[in-house]
Image (cartoon, rainbow, N blue to C red):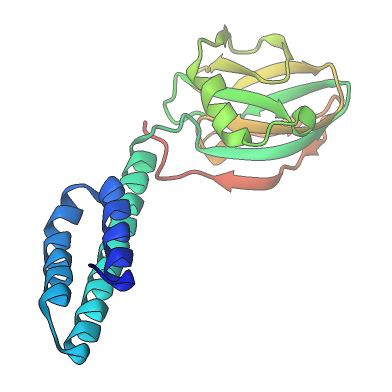
Length: 211
């Protein structure tokens, strides 16, 4: 009969096998040897050493599996294209605002998206990806449009400067996601009196976005 310790090791061998595949096969061959050695050994000291050796090998497999899963997740994250480079939070009233692009370094357009902080969405950034990957309305330079919550717009830019007048129908704090860094356009958000709104909670996503 196998001892309790031996059965304990065998149980975890099977558990890890379900997660680690080929890596388990390579490592468990040594563990199985220790179980066999434990059964045949008549020396108490050797039995204890064999158990410790088997447990140590199982721990190595666990560490290796954890590292492997982390690398896969990282690779998946790195391979996902994020359609924006910057986001910030603006406080809007029910008013008219201007998105002022003071310069252009050669971009034909710039995608943006508005998401209210009161929307209740837990993963705002992930939601913004879906919005900006969907078909969005093209807005010609120097146009006037209503900025809707959870909507994205593709702003068509002039070669030099461009202005877009937007109406906010509901006051509150909104995330503004921008395809490119605002400094590339010297982008300003102005209220109806010409005062510049300043963003807070700004995040840059350099390295994730692909041009």
